Amino acid sequence: MSQFFSRRRWLALGLALADSARGQSNPAASPATTGAATSASPSASPSPGRNEPVVIGQSAHLSGPLATTFLGVLAGQRLALTQFNARGGVAGRPVQLITLDDGYDVKRCVANVRQLIERERITALFGLASTPNVAAVLPLLAERQVPLVGVYGGSPSLRVQQHPYFFTTTASYRDEVLHMLRNQKTLQRERVALVYQNAAFGQLMRPVVDEAARELGMQVVARVPLEADGSNSVAAAASVAEARPQAVILMAFGPPIVPFIKAARQSVAAPLYAISIANAKALIEAMGDDARGLAITQVIPPPWRSQDALVRDFSAASTRAGTPADYEHFYGYLNLRILLEALKRAGRGVTPAKLVSTLEGMNRVDLGGYTLSFSPGNHHGSSYVDSTIVGPGGRFIR
Image (cartoon, rainbow, N blue to C red; front, side, top):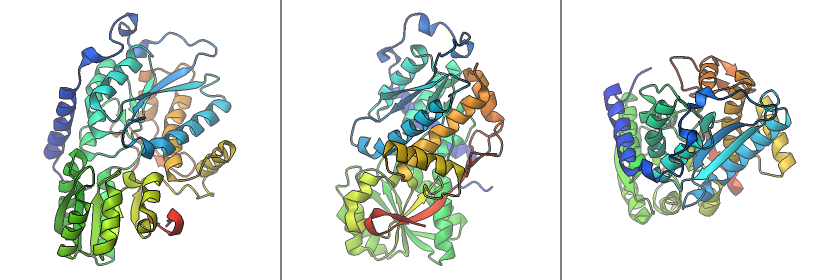
């Protein structure tokens, strides 16, 4: 597989993110840094009691401006956990998920992870949702030998150099960019404009899009920054319109995409394409009719594909709980189902070390419509990408 960035440049970006994140963190601020909990490795857990839970931990943005975009994912996680425990858990042991709020803040995330490892003695970390946050905790995970399984993000920079305790369960953002641009190439749309969030995420993705376009013989005719608060949306849309692209690639997420999409509908004739993290029900509802026709890449299968056993399980859990069977809920459900499957395979006496070896042995494992391929040399289990279009009423069309 060709690399759009050299390994050295990707590694430099990843290390820069990690260094920056560590510079913001202060281990002394951790709520759990003293006492007996810090003296034993999590891999050396005592033999479990009859009903002692398997504890896993998560640090996520339960508060802040992006919190509403994560509600469906959290609800989907709860569906998976409730269903798994009702079916017997890990050889009779229930799984307990402890989720702490980091407000999308690096320092708070690091403190949370320390607490989860040292005080809660988690078997695994799960479900982080920010590239800087993940980068900041990876050194700690290596030190404490606790795996992180499944994150809500696909930063390529974090996947360049394999980390012994980091496992991803969905495709990278680079995979999504490739899928998006190849579709445009097939449709003979070779002049694209890039609108990127004027923050760490967008600045990281700008060279990814540039080099992917060059690799495919396509031209990026405009590179337009979008401020994190969306304040320059009208001006950004005007800049895109002036370049007259055949398609617009949006490397942004969260609230700023709403005013930009609305402004672009007034001045840009080209189709608009966004990546999976822009897919949040709250944002699509906020766009109203302007969301119609927006193409979004997805890194999980459609939640309505009833021929898949995994989707049928999800649908049954959703019906029982009275929650929507949409992409957001399915993302949380699927992501946690993967970790739960690995815990089950590791067995009743699961430890962090045993979980790592179990994951590395899960090669070409079909969970019922979603296939994972891990190995000792590959901790990134999927490159699945699909395309959807927002239709009437905010419903997705393939």
